[in-house]
Image (cartoon, rainbow, N blue to C red; front, side, top):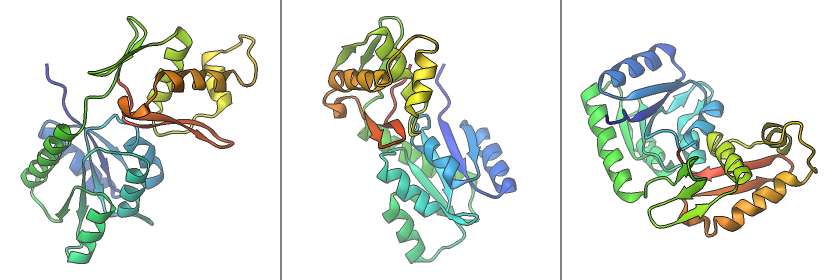
Length: 226
């Protein structure tokens, strides 16, 4: 059975958000909704969605700035922006920030869906398939490379992938993967180093593990799937 494309709708108006979710759901999308820019950003970076629909105005936040930040952090999913502002300057600003298309309100759902499908086809033609994490043989594989991981390396990468785009503190990783086992303070850094060496160059796998100083670690790019 073909998987329904996963779509993230970001709009601060609950009625519009609900209407978009219902309408796009009827057109075959598995829709999840978000109201705020700060909580939407890590979801845009997670690699879990096939496309996003983002309103230009998100309360006190800017949908355009959200798109700009997502692109700066490596988000590559297709983005269609919605706005009641139809002047050329606003459309240009959204497109320059990294949106793939810009739809003016009011609009017909058939038009929005058609534009989404166009951008999804373009994105699929440009990007390689996500790397695959296999628990069967503890490997990370793409169409051209395969890397064998230890149990701990596999668990660490799976945890980072599950929270892609979000910084995980060292202590959280330590408690999740080592629990009550005796472990030195730098054991997380050691295993991050093991993973980075095995996954060089990172561009082969579509993501990288980034150190956020004094905060922890974050997987950025297209998260591997299981």
